[in-house]
Length: 227
Image (cartoon, rainbow, N blue to C red; front, side, top):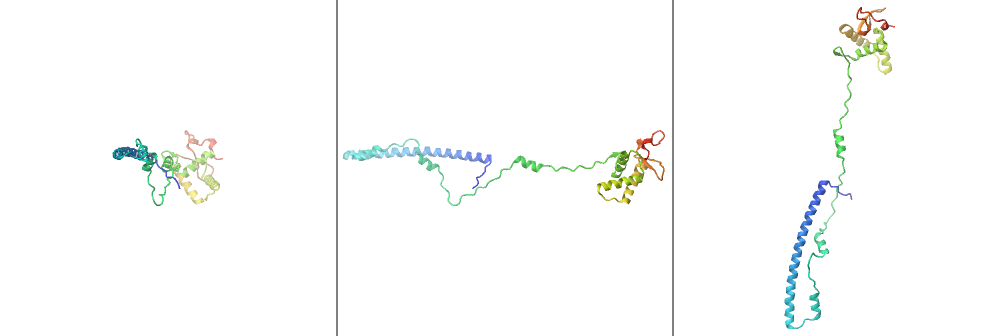
């Protein structure tokens, strides 16, 4: 049978009740002692009266006198057996109560489990340039220029995008790539100053970063010319 587990508060209440019961028993014992003394006095008086009457009629038998003398006076606390009889609680009939074992739970652990915050996934921080956020395709073009360190045309950017898709094992849609690149190039070169259009031997324009162009004559620096 598993033992009952009490909390500290329940243990203190149990000790307090036990101490109160002990005080009550001590009080009852003192009362019992007073009652026993009173009974002893009454018995002694009754015995003395009986002895006096017998003495008037004749000398009492020796055995009876010894029996009267042999009876001791009951003073002090009663015998241990009586005390135990008073303090012992009667046994209860029927089946004993089942004790319920309360599992110990770490309060600190529960608090940690209940208050644990889920990690918030990090949001992708988009680069802000010239007062607006760059789109993924804007960033792709700028990063490609920085990596190659020379001007690029649309065809170059398409090839770079295709190579990246194969490396990442993702689907490459040529029409979608052309559309997205044209939108980003038009926005950054014509509406903003994120890219500079430069001439090259062929149809269309090549695209450069602003710091690749001389501010005086707006010509492309030699080291950034298309290879």
